[in-house]
Image (tube, rainbow, N blue to C red; front, side, top):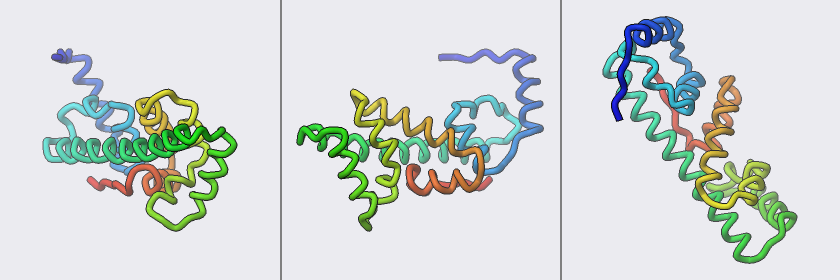
Length: 155
């Protein structure tokens, strides 16, 4: 695919870049909204490469969380657990002290995944949840650690 950028688009990008924030919450939103290209050339090659690498790491981390959620759901469905039994299992898991505990604390998200037909839906659901919760630094810290594998960036 090719993109043709008009002068209007380039000028628009320059205006957006003048207001560009380097706050981590804004960088998460930029990646999850798929708007990295909108920055144009104003951020420079080094920062663009850094952001692209960060974006790849962020998406990979969310995908890993989605794979865990999908495995939990598949296991529950293979055992013919009801939704209620699945919630009880997840509540118990959320109190355990292991690497998956932080992710398991998002019981409502995992429960929503129980109703999805495939792993693609849970990935999109987790991306949307992270995007919704990166509006403040505090919320971002919570989802970064629980759903995004702790990935962070500083420009």
